[in-house]
Image (tube, rainbow, N blue to C red; front, side, top):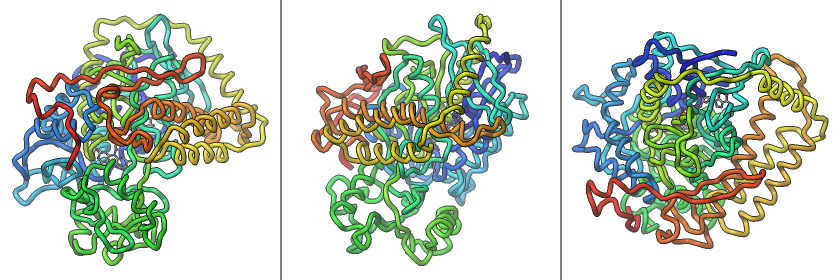
Amino acid sequence: MIEHDVLIIGGGLSGSRAALAVAQNYPHLSVGLISKVHPIRSHSVAAQGGIAASLGNVDNDDWLTHAFDTVKGSDYLADQNAVQVLTKSAPEVIIDLEHLGVLFSRADNGKISQRAFGGHTYNRACYAADKTGHAILHELVMNLKRLGGTIYQEWYVMQLIYEDGEVKGVVAYSLETSEIEVFRAKAVLMATGGYGRVFNTTSNDFASTGDGLCLTVNLGLPLQDMEFVQFHPTGLYPVGVLISEAVRGEGAYLVNDLGDRFMANYPISKNRMELSPRDITSRNIACEIMEGRGINGGNYVHLDVRHLGKEKILSRIPFAREEGLRLAGVDCIDHPLPVRPTAHYSMGGIPTNVDCQVIGKDSKEITGFFAAGECACVSVHGANRLGANSLLECVVFGKRAGEKLGAYVRDRTMPKLDPSPYIAEAAAKLKGVLSNKGNTRISVIRQQLQDTMTEHCGIFRDEARLTEGLEKLQAIRDRYDHDLLIDDHGAVFNMEMMQAIELKSLITVGEIIMSSARSRRESRGAHSREDFAKRDDANYLKHTLGYLEDDQVQTSHRPVDMSLQNVDSDRFTPQERKY
Ligand SMILES: Cc1cc2nc3c(=O)[nH]c(=O)nc-3n(C[C@H](O)[C@H](O)[C@H](O)COP(=O)(O)OP(=O)(O)OC[C@H]3O[C@@H](n4cnc5c(N)ncnc54)[C@H](O)[C@@H]3O)c2cc1C
């Protein structure tokens, strides 16, 4: 059995920031970080456009305006106390990153430069060209190594150990050798990122399979607001990889087959145009396509940057140009890029309080269990996240989680735990996966799942499609349980075995998303019900909780925290969302 005072699952921005905070502030504590990929290959490395903070280097900005933009962007579903923590701490965490060595792009006066992003009133996104996640993650991981944090890379966490109402550690296996280990800890932080792979077109990497969410619901704990899936407006067609919002931040146009900048034709987006929030922009693109105004009547529109000129394109958005060339054969200096919405981000996740401690159905904290980053739902994004607020969430709440964890474990003794039954159970599970002798390959079941989710729970939803989708998911789960075929029976880097386990996570997470979507009979933020087209504050200004009971998904609700209202009374009370 391996032991650490603090155990962190995930080496992306949130996990590595948390681990670093423990190492910086509590050098006598031992911190272990487990990641199924090398930490620097976590999806955070792909983040491009920026990280929001009201530094005020370009405009006269302040945290309260950032907070208001975030709450309005969230369609009033974000917890306002959490938004306050996020936006108030933003400037200091950026300076802190700079001190750790992150090379931000500069304005002419030498200060950190800031660019425009959708839904933000001011130029607020700090950036490192269009490779912001890369710049930050490398420094975090290097600093963590320098301070002696232990990293278990290419270890797959397959179970959380939860006994007597207390999280005591995890069971993981080494991808390199298939060796199984129990890791015991005084506290565990989940930082496992998103689940984009639930959908057939996504900007997310192959590892974004919602494992941490599935591990959590398997304990009987709830996930919050899972119906809110962000579809990013500009996925490169047809592959789905992201063309960063920074491209629109720098002035790109969205154009339909008629050559119109169609954002002007929708009352809700005619002022902010291409820099409207993502939910609105994605819906408008989807409408253009559905109504036959996609390019040549097809499934995409154009993102045009030609008017920016070669020099600006090469200095500000070089990566977007490279992606267009490499993946679509289009050089955006001379031609518009083909784009359509792509599944991008999970607003929902494991519910936590502002100290990142996981809370159960009754809103009480779960002993020894914390979560941060995209897998968590401290609820700063509510029903729709603003661009550049996610990297910020990872760094603010990652840092905060590390600081809280250090203090939390100081007075805790190592929990009592017998590893042997867990090792035996995990070995039996892996053996069970390998001994599957069905007829259907993982890729076939995964494709069915992704197509079902996209068709029945995509940008637009309704009761009939969701109900039918849930029935299809049940059939997909049955097929997984009874007809899975695995070819690789090796013990070394058996990626097929890992994909089989990941697929189970995807199915479970898909069921919770779809059930939560069916339970919310209104339209809010990224959740658009064609049969309930209006926002309904009287009945649904509350968070959804989705959980498993006797293997069936159940849903209930809990209130939104509106405590920031007192700071600036009118601004933060729900109003019609117009831009
Ligand atoms: C292409 C792209 C561009 C983006 N650009 C921006 C941007 O410009 N600004 C912005 O604010 N946001 C952006 N985002 C969103 C943002 O990057 C993510 O929300 C954020 O980086 C998530 O970080 P994380 O630490 O929560 O998770 P991740 O970075 O996804 O890391 C998850 C970690 O968990 C580990 N893990 C998962 N499951 C297991 C398991 N079973 N066992 C062991 N380890 C496991 C993985 O190995 C990985 O280390 C972008 C997202 C994408 C996809």
